[in-house]
Length: 257
Image (tube, rainbow, N blue to C red; front, top):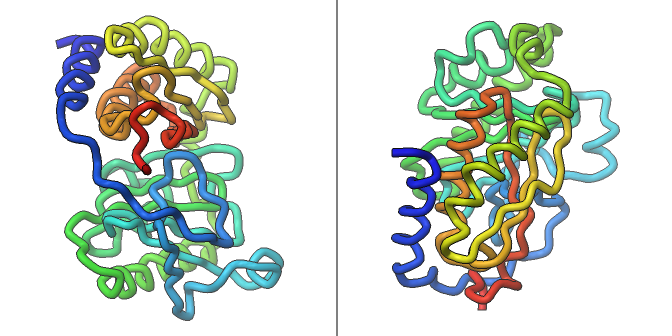
């Protein structure tokens, strides 16, 4: 089945399901959320020798400092470091085998149960399914934080040159992503009043915005992750982070009421 048909079928099926239950409003935080990074609705920053609070001391410290924020469903944890990990670029390591040659990824995947790693600038998003509580993440976050520190203290480039060489110029990334949006993604959601707009490309990091039937739809998150991500990565495997900056609360079927 083509990506276009998969998107159309998935969007149609998901739209027929009940909307997500209302969520509480996000709490104020010192961390500026990046689009489509799954952030806690009420931030809990894990405290440990390797995990610290944000602020002037965090950004300017000569020491390597790390802060962690688990997602509300506890399947992900975002690690923010006061050192560049992959400056100006991003990369998704979807499995352990892909970490070979990249010291940062090798160290993170050496931590038991880590499933995926998304590195962007000075952040690392780790996925681990099956975590049920913040207390479970506390132990895992300490281990991941220590692995990040170890990789940086070793002094080698965190990400392999082989991966860097795979990433084309920003103009090429923009052209390929726009092409897949025009030819496959938008035709797949147009029948349901949806529209996807490419709003920004920075290096190999892509930011999109959903409009029409996609904006505020309870199926939007599923559509983005399963359909659009797959379409982008199939057409342009060098794409790293993919963000969604849609204001879903402004749509006709908002996530939050």
